[in-house]
Image (cartoon, rainbow, N blue to C red; front, side, top):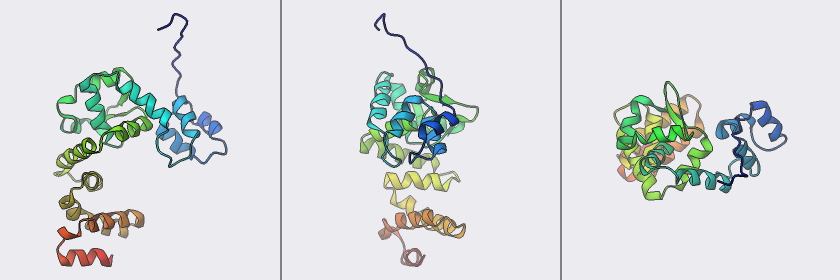
Length: 218
């Protein structure tokens, strides 16, 4: 590092500060705070685009530069964690991350993840998305398939289906998506219901005729 270089650690911006920067932009301020964690660089780069554009290339470059400076175990742990949206509960961490679990200690010390009493998550949602999107398709699919195995015995059907759909696990999708679609429709979550029914129909060859007819009639 140059003797003339001074590093300044910037504190996260408050919601009011993010709202002021957001101004008349298309972003919802609360969503912007949620995906950036108030990180000043992430906020300004996100505001340079529009919601739905995906992770800004400058953010991806910055995230991957930090990722590539970590050890192999830390990088593998972060890659697995990136496919899990939200906070990964401590009691599931070993099953999800396997032998790479210890790599998260390095990630925590580098400020890449946040550890709470309940679990661990990426410090910034944009960093999680950038890491996930950087994975080769086969690697990402394999992680989703592993998560289906981890979640198969549990009761979190929406998360199970999320990963089963992305893993292309037709058997799991047709086993749960029609019922999940029916439930979503009953509670008024019509967009989610349509998504579940559409996912089931992607594997219609695996459904018995009466189940297929029921989905088509829904």
